[in-house]
Image (cartoon, rainbow, N blue to C red; front, side, top):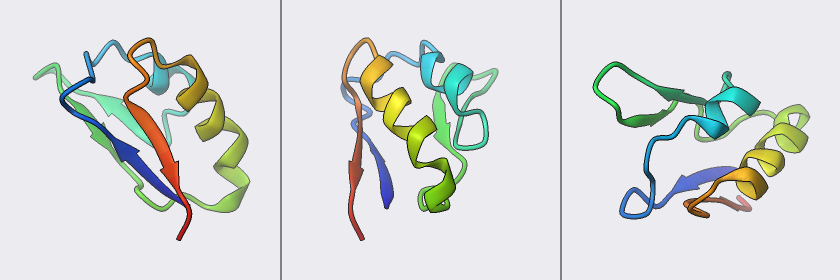
Length: 64
């Protein structure tokens, strides 16, 4: 799986970081960073939850 963020929609509100801090990080510059674009399959439930909980629907999963 590949984590994709639409940065035009993203507001860096850190909801995703709260769910999957191994994958997402909002830094002091108030920008979202994807720490692991290809997280292991074991992370799928957390990443899917981050996709569902994103207030702006800026996160998606693409299958490799």
